[in-house]
Image (cartoon, rainbow over all chains, first blue to last red; front, side):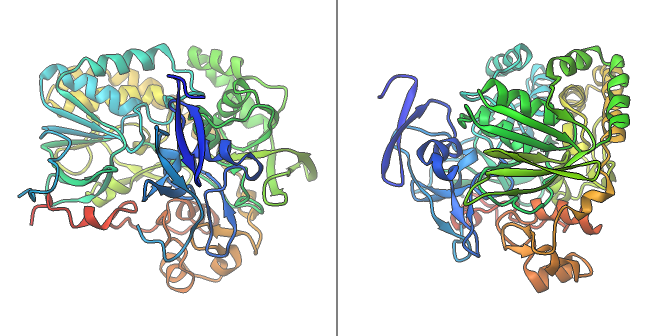
Length: 93
Length: 430
């Protein structure tokens, strides 16, 4: 439900409401608890989830409103569209 | 010249540019602000506070952090730019910046680097599984709203940060089932005994004490189907397996020196084989007009960062007399930093954490075995692509420095992945 304390976004096409101030990295986990919030797949196809939590490792890079951005350094906002599933290699900034 | 279809740069011109809005950067801005100089304070995180004062749905900010944040908001001459990263240098006395909308060149007269530190993340079998994070990494993620309620978490690695991360996770409803500190009991007890010299730290340590804390214990592996289901730990030659949902593992901190290096600032040894930006008594680097404060000058905690930040801010507005009044405070916390390094030195046996098949470079999926045959960074890059992925060696470079003794690669622009439009920014001079 939408309240002043929440924002509603989309993760892989599905609507998701989270607390205001939540990072996209946290939203990935909320949207997909079973896989611990997988963000991308490595060059050898391994699933990777947010790891360093502070913008260093780049493991949490996802597509946010059409831009490649770091989930851990992006706050959720109303209408934000997040898509996971980046394959490493061939995904230039 | 600005192209007509581009929005104007989001920051006004400034005399003093401060990179990094953690405790050091905030203290520097507050110290310099009364002079009236125009200050821009930027950070790549979406809110100010750095790692220790990171705000979010799972954060509990200290009164001091809130006070400083409010004080900064009242400074009309301090322009805050969150969600903004430094891409590269742009001629002399200017940086190329990028936010989600655009790239632009930000000139400055003086620059203070408060770029902080990152965790030393050492490879071990299973460290790429979803559910494995850094220890400070877990704390950062929880503060930003990561739900961990009911999760069983093993925290491992080294340093007081393990206890702080455990406390944050516990407050968010997690069950911290083990805290494994690699340093032995004598070293940790020695550190605790020294804490009486810093009463605030001693009180904090008592508050963080945990029955699940074990010294002389290190992670062996994490395993599970598609996500972490257990961790194996080694203590006194015996391995035990603990069922868990997460493993948070960090082996101390590494100063973020890359921007300083790109600017030509000299490095100095910072203990444990790490390098930090070299500074003089006024926090000035080897490059005229560029100062550095906080963890990028060596790891020592937020109180040291605050003292250094105040000195750097005052030095940057040429008030060295006022800066000197903070020297004693800085020395007090510098001594604390020395104790940290002495007592939580990493055991050489941790070099065997990574097995031959363990990935060391997570960006390019390069194994320990592939690297073990190389003579250094250049050979590793040429033969394996290690360090050439998205993180540009930030993670594997520090790991290889510990594992193989290789000097981390010199940083090259762009400092972080940037958009083509930024690199071709019309705001770039020439």
